[in-house]
Amino acid sequence: MARKRERFERTDVPEPSRQRNVIGGVVAALALVVSAAVVMFAWNRANLESRMGDNALGDAISSQASSSGPSEGYVDAGNEIHSTLLLTSDSLDAGGTLTDARILSVNATAGTATLVALPTDLALTVGEEPTTLGELFSSQGYAACVVPLGSASGISFENVILATGDVLEEASQLAGSDARSLVRSASGFLSKIRTNMDAPGLLSFAETLSAIGVSNLTAVDAPLVAETATDEEGNVTETGRQVLDQTQLGVAVGRFVAA
Image (cartoon, rainbow, N blue to C red):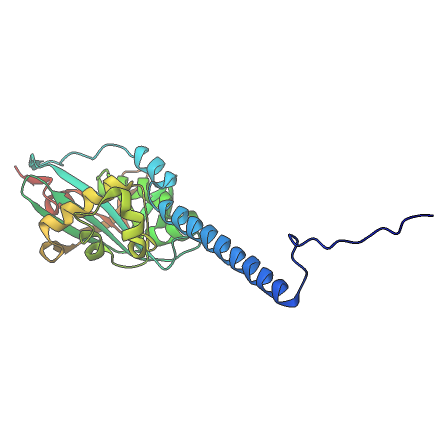
């Protein structure tokens, strides 16, 4: 006669229950939220770090010609000058509109700095084609402005900052910060800029600004002259466009003095 198999219940295996299912669902949901937060934090950090060391700006800066020398009647002042191009746009991405352009020239010899305002309709020539600074920015992007503007001004820019507003005061407040914690401590500032500078370079820029004082910057308008063209017969006529006066710009930032 076959023996009837006895059934035993295991006490080490929890029985399914509605409460246990709810708890499991909550734990799974929390895990997803935490994972999403970690991913978002990592993405934000990477995005902010990408605002520094911009490759397009770095390539443009390295493609510039050397700064031009003084014209007749002027000589080199012998000052140590460091120039940064400051571009302001309504967007840090392609398709933005240039709203402001300035050159910040620091005279390290004298411990002073000059902030030169450039018109956005400044006449430039790119590949023998006439354009303006604003048009070039909109059509080809921020990095495309560096070489033509350096050529027009006679200044070789060491650094470039593209921003969505006037960030000089915020930049100066970074003085004394730690390069390793810059992304964490200055996320608001970094979200407003793109620059060729890395963290140490940006902090060095901040130290310079802080030492001089943003309120002590000498603000001037860029000196302009009428653009002229010479025909085959040697006749000189004005084109109706305004270009930078390289000599007077050099005087304004402390590069040149009258002979």
